[in-house]
Length: 537
Image (tube, rainbow, N blue to C red; front, side, top):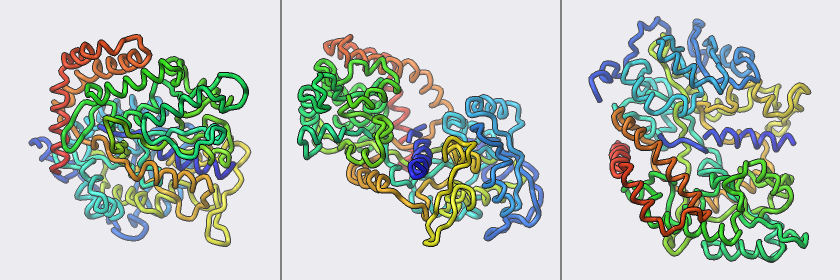
């Protein structure tokens, strides 16, 4: 159970990463690498510890999970002793954080450091606006001088710097950087029911949409769960929120919206590729190969069906989340293999860029920006991320005779090792500004190795970013916001109607005309301009 919980801790950190993430004027030049506050004089050691010889105190605002007060967390306490940097913590609940952060910006009473925000809280447009106003200070010169770990990661992967550099050429906010073995997952995978495959004698997974259709028909008709009833559900989802990416890819699309293809930006839901996807899904729905309750059920209902062994192909982060099996049993459930089709003969698969913005910013109120950037840079090293991920030795783990970590029993007052971990470190359930990766000395289970191997062959070999992380100007963002609300709502409604047959596919031209009247041409042009800026950076 401990191994499972620790594996889950890593994967939930990755989720914050999966899901994730996809959004030069005179006022900006007034900042140009300078902090407008009158910085207090403090000697910052560029190497070693402490970071400062004399203790300093900073204020830090972050979303709290409610498990423990940050001032009581051993990880932060030990790091404060190591660095000579102390903090006054302001950690409103996750549910209130966005509101509290907006109020702090509006009042000007903003903390010295913003930590662990997501792109929904500290949005790309906020980075641009508050950066140009001087509320957030530029970080690129500080990175060059005081953040060797982050700088090395940026040099190794130039996409990081391009993805966090705003339209005025400055970096105002640092990201979480995901290098975990599952970092390329665009979403939770799809899994085949291994018992059903065995029962039907299936030795090779489908590689085309036609082959998938044939297997789903066998799932429906040949009683693979062996109970003598026609209760099998070949394919299931909840509002297509999890399977959509994988099945769009089969028809040559990497995103359900804006995507880039060979340098050209397009809106996928008006392409002929998308029409083929809709046609295919409508066929699955009509023939009861797709669960009829797909657009009406909740995730709990999906899981209940999985635990009754009624599902043939289903999405989830891990298959045992749906089936209730053990990790050992779940290793018999193979990951979905990317498909090709008549309109997409080469494998296309979206990949996560592994960069989650919004995670760390220094404000104009901060008197010690150099010390602050050195403080956070530790988390971008392997040693620092290991320390922040699992806390100091003696709590969650201890070193064994072979140098590998041995996980300790969880105190009785905690329901799980994850809850206990959340009381030790802030790197829990938030977008922590750090390098996300495996803990070097943590033991790895057979299940973890199975997941890594499945990922290498079925995701890593094909995944590519659908559209990079770009920044829009304030004017561009206003236009996008005006167009996007109605556009996304309409496309979502029509997907469900087309798939279920409520709206016949003979009305496709009317659907296209409606979207064209929503100013889609301008929408695409804005994203093309943003992509071109990104590519030229």
